[in-house]
Length: 118
Length: 116
Image (cartoon, each protein chain N blue to C red):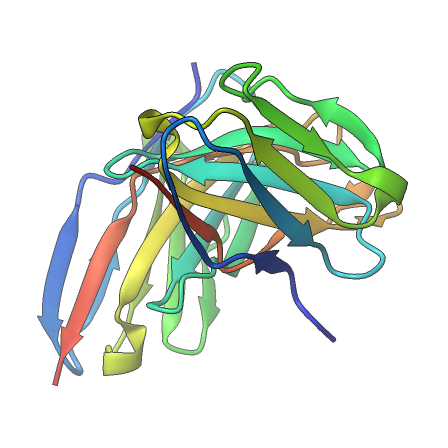
């Protein structure tokens, strides 16, 4: 069965600290996609990143970085020099392709609520 | 460009009543998804439309839920009759096809449904 585990329910940090959100997944398939979404207080789910299972390169986007390790089935998300605006719930999700090259329904973790305090 | 919009943002209804949620996807997006998050649990897939056709409705909880997407534009999700366990946040998402690859899904702000 496919499963996504975000073991950290809530994290609280002080502004400018670095913080890592953990994501561990389970799947039997060799081809899949991994995602991170952010849910700010306004409620919508904001796409942050999609990574396919064949690309293990780490990615950096500004203060955000992602570490994908197939050996440990993990796709962790780090925010460097956190800011108050980073406060949100962050979801990790797994998608298995309906067929080659496509991604369909998402399987979600429970989310990690991040509070960045001034 | 407008994003995915959902109506209403909140709905409080009594058990046994009917509620209809609406989702307007991003223009040109053929793929439309419904998800639900019950408090304290994971976001769960409900169903997937490609244009007006139901591609996958394996996540629909039971026959009290009916989703439609007439004309392949907006979609509605009707719950009739509503039960207490239907309470949660209902998310809609849309995505487009670029060649053989589907792009990432863009989500609306969700509809918070409370059944009392």
